Length: 467
Image (cartoon, rainbow, N blue to C red):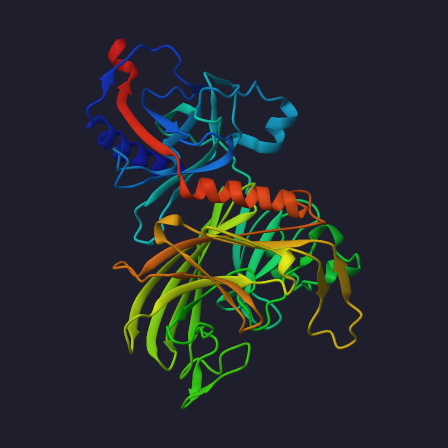
């Protein structure tokens, strides 16, 4: 049955690819892997416009940009010719990976990628992969077309939705840092002591987020962000009253009885109050995305609904978020978007520059629901950061209310959308584990975030034309 399905895919995509205007080129340097010797490829170039090296740099190619529209995941092989080819696997390696393991390669090495359907219409929206680039480098890579059933891709990120202590919440993580939404629009942060993907284990076994405090699941780490009524490690809101600079509206603090604002950390109910729904959009290997739908948000001064797509990236300590308001009905003009993180009460532990806010300093990792107050652990350094893209011209505001927050105010645009990045690290992790290292990482990541690589497509090549 599997052979019949693959044969069907071969016929469909071969016909689609054959209809494209392939150009004849020399055969030198064509990639092979075992008996996989593709006949068609496209050269692409990836330009780093920055004067800094970029590691595990995200590369996004949209369906609209890419010249070949009709693709299937197993008909695409991305090859970096600058990487050393894989040697012939040993018998032990073959016994472990079986028939889907990568065999001996020539002329480069294939890299992991994702062909992601973000809007869930059955058609891919983005081709995504990561690469390393030297300062100012323009790298040549090849996308080969032809069916290949080999190539395992271990996950560097993970996303899930689980019932965690009787509460449905989404998680998304890379191996060194993770996030979850215990409060539906204010992010909790989880630090790992050793690189692990742990969200599936936390949900599967309902492990306490603070079990690492006293050396239970020690390597997994611990919750390291106190959220309470704040924005936590990242959250959204609205500035609805220009005349009240310290006033902000948040979805989980909405009026439920006339003008009374709920002070509960959760909304009152799913009928009359704000409600939420969560989806896993993509799940690795290189990036994982959860989608948060916020609905029926009546702030008392307007009615709003929105989606947020939070994405974690392999080998990175940041997550990006795309915000799209689907209903935006304020009662008056002048309403502005807001996103923020919790601030440190000690001013010296905060760092602000254009479009960047960083919170650092000591933190007491303590289970707020443990009445015995025995589960506490002093962490020397916990860092969280917020970056808003320059194109949105963010305006910084130090918010005293809701526990004290770093907030960026953003003008409402015609698309009713904006994007931001959150990041985290701690002193007991293996990377960016001091305030200076974390600040350096955030500033570098912000620069890369604002300057995505430039991808250029060259002619489609057909090796067979030279036979």
